[in-house]
Length: 102
Image 1: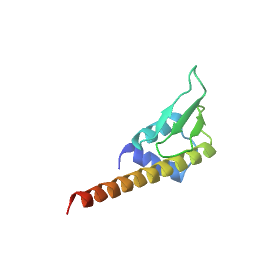
Image 2: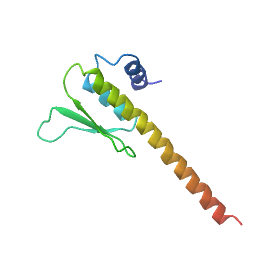
Image 3: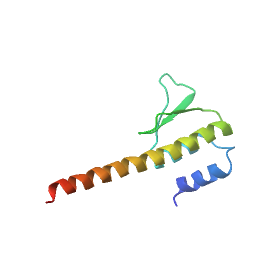
Image 4: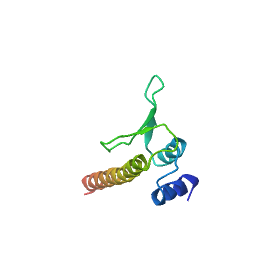
């Protein structure tokens, strides 16, 4: 397990004392996109393909536990969405294989 995987496990165990850099690191290793709004906004916005919800986290130290809980829910939803996308692709590939074989 890499450093970000360990950070994710620690986040699940204790949701206080985290910095925005920690969330960004976990996000990047889990395929979650992040951005800071233009003009130097005070929040970081996290989102993932296949997930409708976004999480906006204030860039203050330390991050309040409620924001960490929302972020962890986004990580879980992103993993679920990625699994569903892979399953659909597998199903599509298998159906195309059946079409080409007599």
